Length: 222
Ligand code: B1M
Image (cartoon, rainbow, N blue to C red):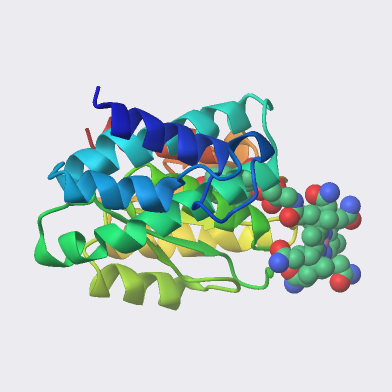
């Protein structure tokens, strides 16, 4: 693989945002994801390769480590920040259609629930895996999800809940979505959920962690 892209993957995995950022201490003063992406574009490397073989490789590694409890929430957040700084430079190529996402997913925390830390991590990992995420935020009900599905050409919906009370709202939302859009895959996750619960409400997948959700999307929509 191209040396610059290898370096870029390391920057994302380690959370090295740009040359000024002091973190991680052993990379102080070195170029970060921002500068390396800039150089890669200047050298004429295809922006899709920068995304697939640099940024996504780094985020993929951190996603797997997070799933395996080898790194923790702050590590994912800083990796996502590094990726985001590089994505700013790729924005024009997405807009011109030169770089393409694997597809779009609508994501939100369900009605009555204000917990979004976990949902935001899921969003970052899925985005880092090459998907476009339409994030509806918190307290999102069936109407909000249905409108977003209608507005954007999405392949899947992800629902998050942290409360035993609000997880019950996932059933109504899932049923409403499946009634209108039976082809849309519904993924559910959040600390109080189980596989049995997901099956009971008619969801397609219970993902215990962000990587599980990403692996599912990549497999089903390969
Ligand atoms: Co709340 N809260 N909270 N809270 N809160 C919990 C969840 C609770 C377990 C604390 C406790 O009592 N021990 C408890 C729930 C009890 C229950 O229902 N069984 C609780 C309660 C009761 C409440 C309130 C009702 C408290 C009150 O007001 N009396 C209230 C409810 C407000 C509301 O939502 N309407 C409330 C409020 C809050 C804060 C606003 C203060 C704050 C949320 C801030 C925010 O999110 N912006 C908060 C917090 C921070 C927590 C705890 C401490 C931490 C949650 C968290 O962010 N975890 C939590 C106790 C705990 O877990 N220790 C607690 C870290 C996060 C990375 O993990 O969200 O599980 P998690 O997400 C994971 C996975 O679950 C998975 O991937 C994520 C990344 O690994 N995942 C998915 C999540 N969604 C997924 C979707 C997928 C796939 C994977 O696919 C679509």
